[in-house]
Image 1 (tube, rainbow, N blue to C red):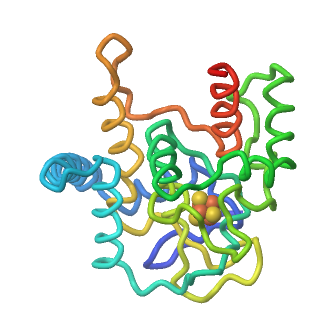
Image 2 (image 1 turned 30 degrees about the horizontal axis):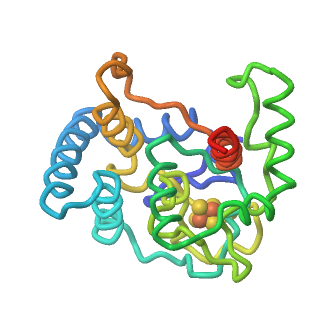
Length: 240
Ligand code: SF4
């Protein structure tokens, strides 16, 4: 079925197909606008982070929130509406590190989070242990319709301030979704969204020690939340 769109963005049916979204964004924003937005945003984020003594990622979240407030219609999404929190969320190392910082600040117990999310964590671990080519795995299908590990019992996000890009860009302008099919959810709304993943990738690339840095390709590896939790747990066990 071809993607449907209105003046706000492309409607998603429970899941965003990255290729379809990319095609939509390229039609919606001219290449020149995308390049300018990327360069300006990157520069602004770096300056702001330095001035405010915050992390570049938190500075980027601030600019993205501002872009939504300024350019997009009012959101219908509300605290406690968690339909979009039942899809697979993928994030980069930098986003995961930002969440670990918040987890520490808020005193969230990650062992408890892992315990609560055993069902999906076991599924992800099973795929990792199967030695399949990880690029070929349909990761979203592995955890679809299951609550995100960071979805609290009150149906609110426990790490809202530092939630990853994947979560920030699924929004609804028309109505409140009634099912996990996300019937009103949209993506591809502001140009800052279109360049968001590349900005994050570049910030992460610049923060990587020189001996580890490779050529910048505009992307960074993404892993599901459950995968990051498994890696965190394994690292912790090794330290003991
Ligand atoms: S991180 Fe927060 S906003 Fe994102 S899916 Fe999980 S609970 Fe929802």
